[in-house]
Image 1 (cartoon, rainbow, N blue to C red):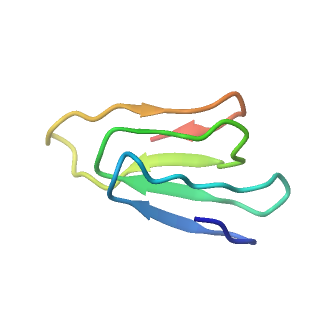
Image 2 (cartoon, helix red, strand yellow; image 1 turned 60 degrees about the horizontal axis):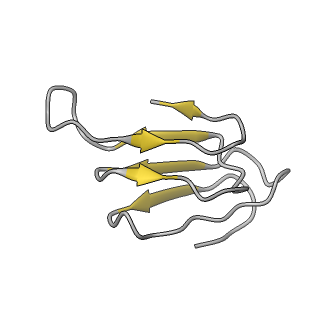
Length: 69
């Protein structure tokens, strides 16, 4: 999945890959499954779509700076 500008990506499979270049706006990935960002993907926010108090999931950033929520 790729796009330019401020983007929200909704991931429902741990095998999905989101690729964003730097300088492409505020990009966010939202997921309800364990997910790791691809190396070099310039995502600013990685977060869960699950409500608090539900099943735990693992969110893993990459070598760039992200906010993990």
